[in-house]
Length: 162
Image 1 (cartoon, one colour):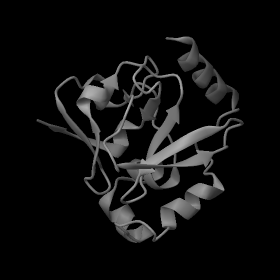
Image 2 (cartoon, rainbow, N blue to C red):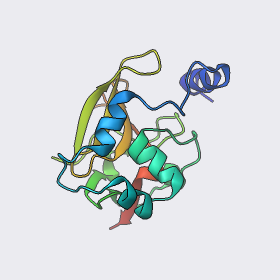
Image 3 (cartoon, rainbow, N blue to C red):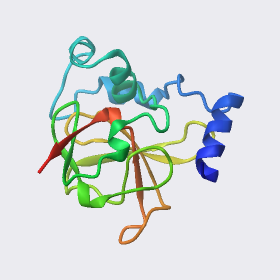
């Protein structure tokens, strides 16, 4: 377990980070109709499992190390589970040691971002630009050539092998 993973787990245990609390901006994003693919709350709930809905529409986070996509090594493309938009090529995936699938870059015109100041920190939230589904967060501690770490919830993704 690396230091970052330990600190996040410790903060969760201490109650400093509560993944059950939805930021006010998440409610706006989840219900917004300004995305190319729009579904009502009822349509999203019919399409997604309860936990998928919580992560993708209410910005919750899956437990570190729980995604089968964490260990996916094949060549292919990661798609949005909400609308099947290709988001990340497998050649940008790397092992970050955080317990979540991580990428240093996305496909062109695939994602959107917004400021997320929840949990006592400044972060950049990343979502599917077509349907608004929450994917995870972007941090500036990734490898070159971008120096970014797109730290994603595997539950928000579908892997399509080449």
